[in-house]
Length: 151
Image 1 (cartoon, rainbow, N blue to C red):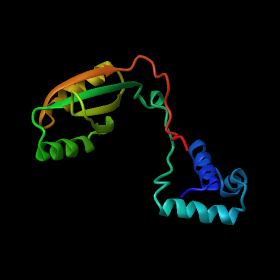
Image 2: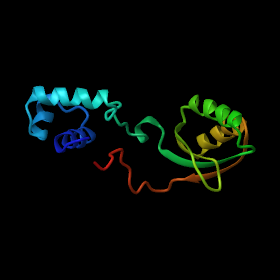
Image 3: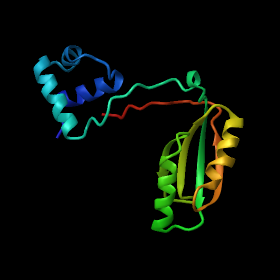
């Protein structure tokens, strides 16, 4: 079970993954050595899986955010496996979620612009195994974006 100190450590790390152990300990209200031990345990227990830099998509020519609904022609383990394998090899796809409802997968993609999306759709996505239909939702305005989980 997480106590309040562990929760403070996790909240602080979500805000600033580059924080020094000394500053993290100060935020959590414990000594640096105790903080180091707690963070090591949180990593070992899988609470902290990675610490990354968040990049500005526009500066890297990936300003268009597009969500895509994917409906497969069949829903068998073999089709799921082939689709998942193909998705993992496509850098434009940031996230892929199997969902319940009127379609099978929801993809989150980032590309430079609508022309780049059209190329991705025609050259890559439509050639993936088992796809029967896709629906595209280009994002006009990103109202909220966060990677922080409520703790």
